[in-house]
Length: 214
Ligand SMILES: C[S@@+](CC[C@H](N)C(=O)[O-])C[C@H]1O[C@@H](n2cnc3c(N)ncnc32)[C@H](O)[C@@H]1O
Image 1 (cartoon, rainbow, N blue to C red):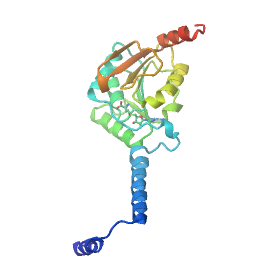
Image 2 (image 1 turned 45 degrees about the vertical axis):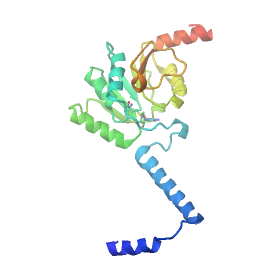
Image 3 (image 1 turned 180 degrees about the vertical axis):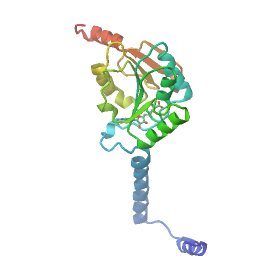
Image 4 (image 1 turned 90 degrees about the horizontal axis):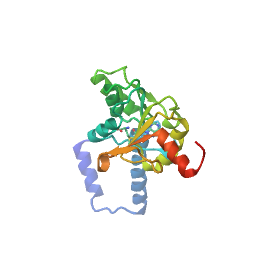
């Protein structure tokens, strides 16, 4: 459209009010644009995940990454980030000696970004990012797990992790604590706060309060 046409259109529209039908069209258009943005850019790959389990991407802050790592200090072995975003936690875990360091993520854009970041850090092919639904990943061979997900999904995650993880595992939750688990320790303040949970202690505490045999 050339500038003259645009000017003509602007003159035609001038002075017109938006009627009821116009408002409906505007609302539908805005809703559709928001849906395209949500489904195509923010949450692609999430079609099969129930809406109540869909957690959007919000990257950990540098301080939060540091806090998560400090709660894993002195540990080794496999490290998994459930919902790995742009891969920053996994990459940092690899740099600190965790092998293998693995991220599970459904958003293909974020997986590409993760691999790009790994490549830039000279770690391409050394860290692993899988396009997989975290709810379908079996974590029974993981000693170190980190999660930064929405509070609404944490009760269900508690059940899954408790059913699968070995006693020696430590889970670190960034920003939001697990609702019923007793943390071993925590570090940081405000949005950077992180909590560490030793699975053996979580099981023992749960058994004590729920009265079931060890
Ligand atoms: C709050 S972000 C945290 C990202 C990263 N762990 C960090 O700390 O920077 C949560 C991530 O989990 C991913 N996610 C949410 N539900 C998922 C699922 N069912 N399977 C795999 N990834 C999921 C989202 O795409 C998002 O990137």
